[in-house]
Image (cartoon, rainbow, N blue to C red; front, top):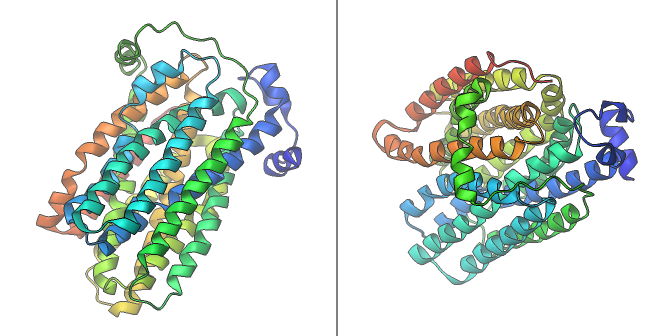
Length: 431
């Protein structure tokens, strides 16, 4: 079964391409490919069932949580998973087997989202809002452990030209599952859904992380040389030298920071859609379907393009995101009525979802392929930590939206995305 999945995805048994992983690792690529796809599908689906920009925001609104708590969801989720990664990377390099970091991180995420579900069933108002934000902090820190360990495992177990396809396949499958959930919301005629149903989504997400932990524990990982790191913090600070000594890496980090404008803009699409449709629950479903369908339909395609040229993937996806943002800023002023607005924002959310998927595929594949076995964990950690700082500072855009409106913020993000696209196009190809 695992051999068939691998051959169906890559089209051939191509072990002669195993130039950047060990011979022992090459011999078990099909098994590791399938098991990591399974683990990734479980975790990605769990992510979508507990998405802060959609599910958690709607849940906290239903619980009567303060706007300040709702506004913290996306910055906490994104920055919390990135900021500690330089330290995590230093600790992880001291261990020859790294898959257990992913397993432990997944178990913590399971506990955190189950806790959110229990909060939803037992608390309301500010107590519920800030309790969920606190659990989201724990969730995000664990997510950071998974992020850096998954990239290290990907580089150790899957050869180049196959990594993007693995990520793309997992994204497409998880997106397809989430489409079904979104359709349920879209077809629901109720103005509001019971809080218990949202809690059920969170419990299901927790179960998925348990399944993912089991799948990743079965990955056949060859031991790496354990680094002699006496202090994870000192090693983290020392890792900053890559920004000075590797100009390509520095340029990639700047491009990635600019392209992050895409994911930062998405909550403002939701706000505009909520206002235009009167907050009817069906509009949440349409957005869920649109976002999930974008991932499901484009994940594999973006993955193949990333294997061919992750640089071009970043440039094309960033440019398309910028153009969609400009289009959204222009169309947002048109009154199409509730029904027309639902479908208009569903289409726009689908298009920005396509671009966001491409950016994620491109930047993940580029950094893994640019690095080598000795510095991969460090480069990923430095890049992610810098992104965490950028995302944390981006919380100020919520205040900007109160002054100039969501349309202007989306336009600013669109221009930043176009700038990131142009910078990404100047990156060299990685082989």
